[in-house]
Length: 96
Image (cartoon, rainbow, N blue to C red; front, top):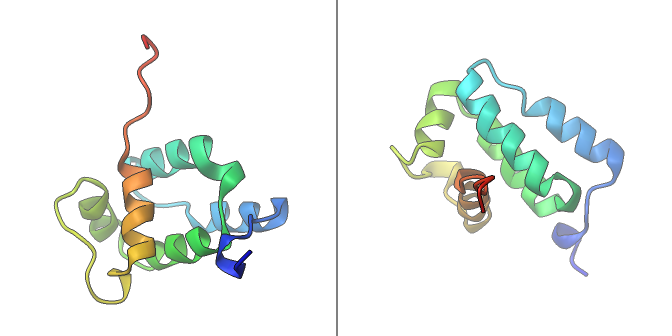
């Protein structure tokens, strides 16, 4: 198994989750929903992609999450694009 595909342990998940705390509540809502659905299966590669996104300003991150923009520069990687798709995916409807 490649290092990027290895799951984060509990401590590593806690560190990356703390790193993902944002100033805009809208960003926090996206990120909390992502961790609720995918946090237990988060890999080292996904954590690295998440760290790249967290280097952005709150407004730039929100633009990506709302599909107003697509990644560019350092954030324009396959891993970041895949992670964005997971974060952007709407939560399942409680009605089924």
